[in-house]
Image 1: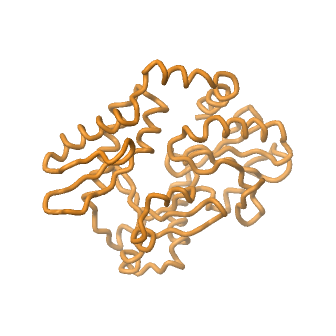
Image 2 (image 1 turned 90 degrees about the vertical axis):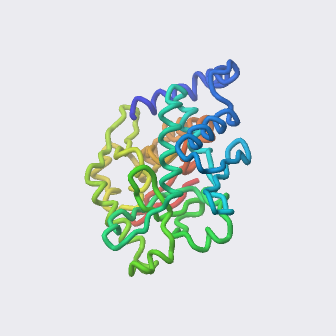
Length: 287
C-alpha cells in the first residue's frame, strides 16, 4: 500500500494526463458498458430475476412475486474496476456476490452481535437513501462532513444495520458505538503504522476498516508517531487509505492537498477531501 500511495501521488503530480489518455484510447469500459456487464453476471447468477438498467450507475433488480425493486448502485464497483482495469472479472464477481447476499438477507441474532462494526463515511453516502432508509438505518453524525454507519460484516459484503433489529437484540442506540468499537478492537489488534520514508505514516489493517480506526482513541497517541512535529493530522481519502503527518510539516500538507485535488473524485469508497486533527480526545476537521 505504501508504494501504491507514493506511486499514485507521483502520478497525480507528474503524470496527471496519463489517465485521461488511457480513457480516451478506450482501454476502460464506459460506465454504461460496465453496467451492462454487471446485468449479464447478475442475470446468470439469478435467472429468475428481472433486471433493469435505470442509469449508467444504477440497476433495479426484481425478484419473483415482488413488485418492489432492489436498487443496486454501481459507482463503487465501477471506481474499483477503473482503478485496476485488468481486474474486471474479479470485480464483477465480487460485487455480484455482494449484491445477491444483501438482497437475500440474513436474520441476525444475539450471537451475531460480534459482527456489528462501525464504518466512517462521508455524508454524501446518504444521498441515494430515501426517507424510510434514513429513518430505519443505524448511523449517526460524527464531524461536519462525516458519519458513522453501523454495519453487519457478512462473508461477501456488509449490510447496514437497522435500528429495529438492533432494538430487538437488546442494543440501545446510545450503546451502539461502544459495542461496535469494542468489536473493532478485535480487528485492530493487527494494526500497524509504517513510516513511508516520505515524512508520512500510514495506517495498515485489512483494506476495509482502516478509516474505522479513527474511532479508537487509544491508537492516536504520539508514541505511535515519534517523528511528527505539531499536532497529529490525518488525511483519509478513502476507506483503506489513512495518512498521518504533523501539522507543522507544511511541505507534506501541500503535497497531500495536491494528491487529493487530483485523485479524490476518482477513488472508490471516498471518505474525506481534507484533513482531520486529533485534539487529544477526538478528531475534528482541519482547515
